[in-house]
Length: 47
Picture 1 (cartoon, rainbow, N blue to C red):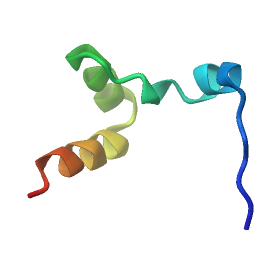
Picture 2: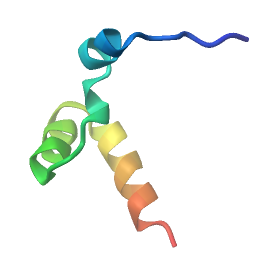
Picture 3: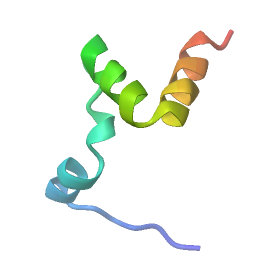
Picture 4: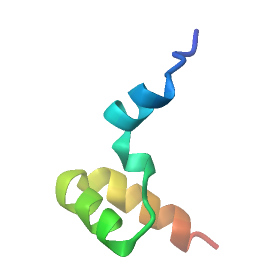
């Protein structure tokens, strides 16, 4: 198994979901990627 290395530009282009800084960002994820949103919320709510 290997890992893919990304440049900073590739991360900004391909992985914009890592820029969750405001509640609106999370709402956008919920709208476009409900399963990812639910997973992130479950991590936040975990004991």
